Length: 258
Image (cartoon, rainbow, N blue to C red; front, side):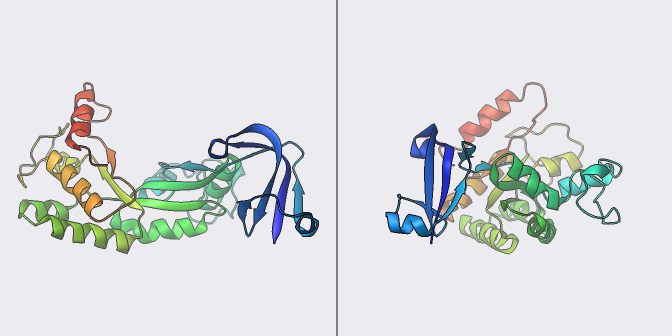
């Protein structure tokens, strides 16, 4: 079955389309070459009369589900009733905006996929429940590792890289995550001890390991387990004066690993 978006002002750098008016043909929801005349007569035609048609955008980092978003909703229960898509009695529906509305907002901006970059393993069921409520767009999540007690203890106890890889693979499988996210590797543990900053080679006093060790261990795990998505690193000390050196050190610590 063929269909056609007719008279589209098309933009797609991959196809080398830069705003010219053209007809875009599809067969089974895939872009295809212009079919034969007989097939064109049977096709479904959508004449957009010069409107812009472009490849869907992918937002690789946007907090759309899970604890971060829901905490914000709890803090702002009075906002934006006029934007509600649900009854006011629905939990969290008074905040802007609901998970249901998120899909429409991103679609209006031309996005077709959004990645939630901060899913705690323990919150994975809630994140996926919210994903199921987001219409139209595709969704995925990165699971947070790097400060969890189990991983830190495994490294402290001298666990092999293959054991770490098994733990990472198990976590990804159980949480249905696209990839790994590291936020202030080891920093959460350091902050519990009263630290205000945590540099790459600072050592966690209760564990005897550094942020560098955590990062390199997880990057190695991502490569050795064949993850298609590189480790997403939220560097230490962001927002702290002079943190540029921490960022440079973090990039160099990767030693070419993604």
